[in-house]
Image 1: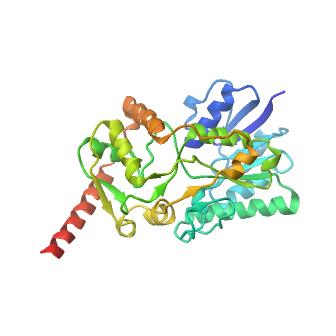
Image 2: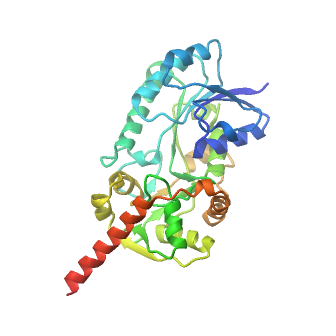
Length: 341
């Protein structure tokens, strides 16, 4: 008999790969609960319940009488979201998986080596503090009443629709590739030598599925990442190589970028991407024997870029971000000229 899973969301960068892998297998009967905005690519055999999870009474009615082996929350960002889930699913699932974030790990870092025992604290990013608060609520419910929670902390995970970069505007990362193709300089935070970990969503899916309905996962938190560490200079250069163009890197202090950006770069950089991090996946590998990320970045990003180039609808221009990059570069060059004059 197949086990039953309910995903809240299920069509994002991370969850799409998990949905596809479960649909291709024989072990799980999968249902997605979402608003239906991106269900066009959902595989056959996956049941869809179209509803807004924030309408708690309607969702409760739609799920009346159903129980699950695993419920996974992919779009829970503030404590009110997980408090609602606790009310909806306590006593109705063998496991509740909450997708938190590796950005919740301690900033500023004491050590770049990150394990699940690294303290959670991020004064630079409200997003991360909200994730920590969600974890705190769920773990308290596990300790006091046995609510069967598992916390998963992804770091920078990517798929076929968007290139992972350090800095981009509100419309995504295509404009960074467009600058490369146009021969324009590309902003890279700091000197580009800090280490970062990028994980292909198909690798993430393997770790995630191994934790589903896994008794060793209950009451525990796990990081799921690749074991590959790259500098940001390498990350951008590999993208340029795939595009077949030279990279023109322009390095600017992360603090300066955060101070002048119309976007939240304090959280994204100071609270996350400007820090060198090396993740230890030993705990995951103990709970999921045989787990290994196998998609190297230069392999995965080639697939991503080729997919984006083949689908114009993914090539979303961002002239505001492009102009901001030009202004930052012009301002730094003007400061150089004035000090050298």
